[in-house]
Each structure stands twice: as structure tokens, then as C-alpha cells.
Image 1: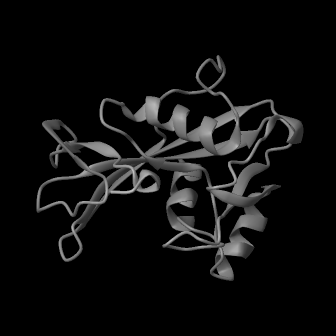
Image 2: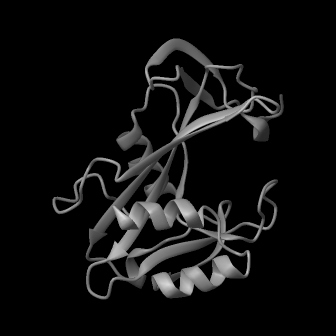
Length: 176
């Protein structure tokens, strides 16, 4: 394994979202009944209700150049909230760990079991509403090539043009 292909270890969960005690490489297919954890963050500006969205880097294997909300996979030893704090900080430069006004529980969760590809996972979506602005955002170049603040209507338009990921899940989370 070369230096730039470092192994990312994840905790393996059962169908009840309980850790099995097994740790696996993030890229390894998971068998029936085993899952990994992903997290997504809706970062809403309190001042105008706009949501921070990012555009995926063009060298991504999946959905290169698509718009999305920040997120990613939880690493071994992380709980869901710890993973979302780390992912948001890495991808946007925003530190939500000590945000007093932010809810620290997911507003929406779902599960995917794709046995053909071993792509089994849970996703927790968090909704953080707090004061931040453009100068606070620092996008990680390896993850994203652009960002912007968008209304839900603008996100819907991107989704209608097949340019926004996880739209139906985002909509469900915002309806909660």
C-alpha cells in the first residue's frame, strides 16, 4: 500500500446499530447484517436560513463535481457526533464541537443494505443552525472545489438538474 492510499479503519455495526467489536478497512465490502456509519451535516446560517453546500472534487470516484452537504464516514472509535464534528471541521473549517445553540443529536437517520456490493451503512443527518459567514468557511481542497450558501429552493433546483446528492434525505431531515 503506498503512502497516499492509507487504510481508514471503521467500526462495524450490527443491524441494531450496535458495535460488533470488529474493525474493518473502510473500502472492504460488508456482508449481510454488518454496517458502517456515515454522517451528514446541514449547516444553516441563523441570519438568513441559507445552507452551506459544497461541490465535490472532480477526482472523486463517485459523483465527482456534484453538490452536497458536508459529511463522511465515521472512523473506528468515533461515535456519530464525534464523526460529524470531525468531518465538518475537515471539510469546511467550521468547529461545531462547542456550539451551544446546536443540537447534538441527529434529526434524521436511515439505513442502506446493498448486499450485491457490500455497501451497507447507516447515515445520521444533523441539522446545525448557528451564526457563521463566508469568512469562517475554509474548504478542504482534496474534498471540494467550491462552496456556496443556498436556499432550499436553490438546492431543489440543483436536485432537479441531477446536480445535488442526497436530496430526498436532506428534504426528509428538514421536514423533521
